[in-house]
Length: 130
Image (tube, rainbow, N blue to C red; front, top):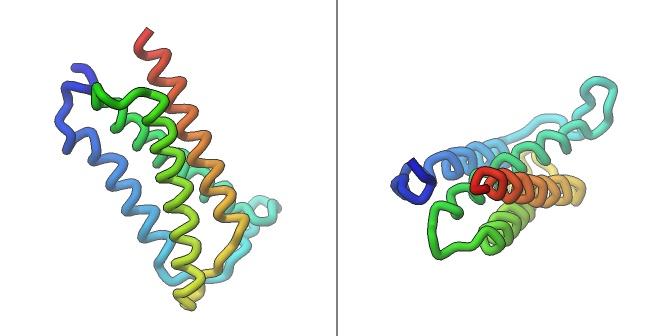
């Protein structure tokens, strides 16, 4: 069954659920920031990058299920949606004052993850359709 033949509900279920995970994890009260894991300072940026890379990939794949949306358009929509959401949630943390902190480096990691996830989706979809 092709991606275009799947129902929109099924196609959008993974990115919506993953987006909810990002939303909850980003806005739940937090503890100490600047996580140090494996001796690497700011290791949490890897988590930010990974969460948004996966989300952008899922969004890209959902968008490619529509015949009128080109891969290029799907790429830019997934990048912009990921980057804008990442920035907005960081500002949400700024206004929360519940153990969360606003960090420019988190915004960069979120946006970079969205770019890499979208590129991965573009490459995957291109190879799959050859």
